[in-house]
Image 1 (tube, helix red, strand yellow):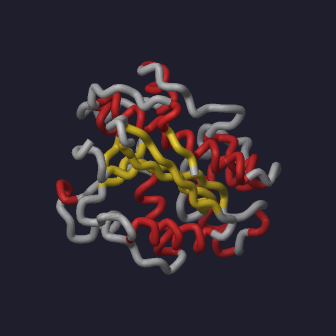
Image 2 (cartoon, helix red, strand yellow):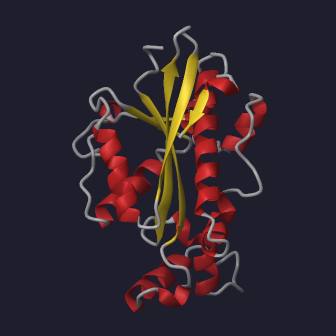
Length: 238
């Protein structure tokens, strides 16, 4: 337990920064047109507006975070390992990020390690960029300035599964199936989050999906360490 007690598992869900493309400032429309040109080659029929609805949430410059879920291992009185999750949910991204940062500051920062699936490529840089865009200084566990690679406290279950093979991408859902971990997938997945947020106005559903992903990441991490899965009754969602 001591080896894993300072690991904070996390996942984020992101959407386009505005509900409709026409709501973008003209200056940002110009920038999106330049970005869209990079992936329009395969979909020549799609307009800047179409691509905005499909892809904007993936990019921190054109998206925003609507929920962050975190999880930490616990131990009960009989020394059984458990997991406790928490969600930060808000339409106002600045409030959400400040609450997340405040939670990090209450933890043991020098020892804290962040873990996510594809976190080094997506979650960690996305959170960091959105914090700076919102005028929020980075907490130590996200501030990589001046640090050597081995000093950065980030773990990534995708990287662990690659074993140095940088060509190999494996989804969280596939790894959950391989290791027989109950899936986080319901009637939504990452590609539908923007639609559920803006069309269905169902942020609660998105946050539940996000928290379930955190549970899967934590369980996957245990399997990669040849440990037993945490039983459902020892998982606490808050």
